Amino acid sequence: MTETQQTAGNCLAPGQPVIRTWPLYRTTGPLSDTMSRFEGDGVRYKAKLIGMDPLPDAPGEKMCLDSMMKLKGFEVAARRQGKHKMRIWLKISSGGLKILDERTGIVLHDQDRTRISSVTKDKSDPRALAYIYKHEDAYILFYIKTATQVKTLCVITEEHMSCLQNM
Image (cartoon, rainbow, N blue to C red):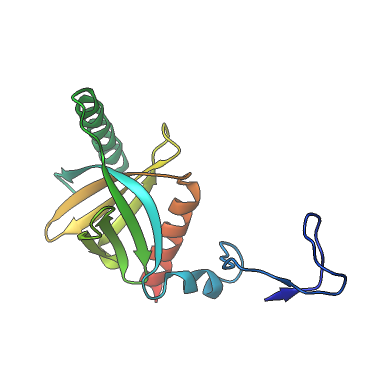
């Protein structure tokens, strides 16, 4: 993509086109443009897996919040013992979500988009989110802390999963 507009700080001759070297990802605009990011391998986010918690019944908001608090407590206790959270890559693609080990690249969890029921942002931590995955007859809450603000990731994930389920 080229532009003819010159910006401050560059050393181009007058009339020389500016060439962008970074990919143009859009989170706004037509849905088809936003959805194209998730084709193929999808989008990868750096994160840490705080924990997983099996839920006894069909998920409700209160149950999710209780489970998130429980996993936070386990994480604090583990930190006191010198243990660290597992470093992962969270990949969002048209097929669903994948959790990969950051060091080895091994797929730890491959989750189909139709089995993810909800994505919840942690109100006390702007970088943490939780989602519920239905595995056979049980529900499992995955609690993840990302490297960046989770607000856009939650919106993208919810938008992506709901659009794919409507297809």
